[in-house]
Image 1 (cartoon, helix red, strand yellow):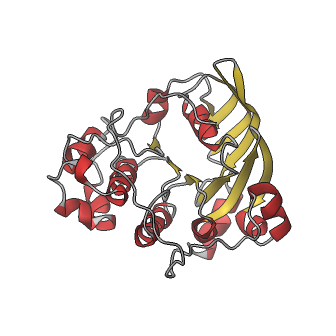
Image 2: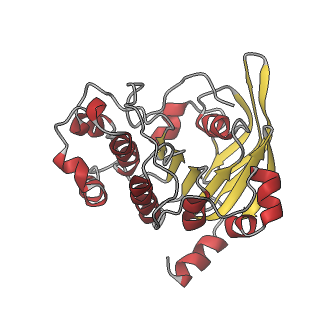
Length: 281
């Protein structure tokens, strides 16, 4: 992103503004008042330890769980809207479990994500960013690797010219080479559409995010520039539970840790929409 684009993005009001977001599931208070801004351009990272409430925050923003507070999308209050109404307003979601239809082909999964009234689907962009999906268009999504399924999940968010992309743990469990590819695509996407990124890999956060918010015990514990947090070992240790701000896996270098193998995802709800399963803390 060039200097002028950076200046314009910094001057523009946030695309998404969350204030006092509270979520109660089964009588249990999961979120106690989350405040979050997603910049009008670039990537905003949502960080926190395991169980802090990151995924619940995303699900609260999307209306997948009962919520109170304020969620404003480009100035419009949306906390009263159903999930499908947010999708129609241009919110794309790549869930943590990817949500592919295992029995359907790659092409069918993408086709189901097309949104009526959103204009011509951007298949050219999708296949430019993920050429492997073109070659596997007729392959059943359930036979893809975890990384390939993640490509499908992200590709669905890029089809319809969305105003906001929310990606929940997009690199979780992926081989380092695929992590690099996913980071590259999200970096490219963030040049034209804001991205809210839930991520544990701090190397990916360092590469992509200009802004961040940290969730702790269901509340916002920190908001500010991502680099400022990652470059402060004491703050990183206190807020994220890491001994230093430089993670063990770097997107551009050979990792020291052996990559994990991601099992095939089970089918969930319709691609391009979002699934209404029990909230994760």
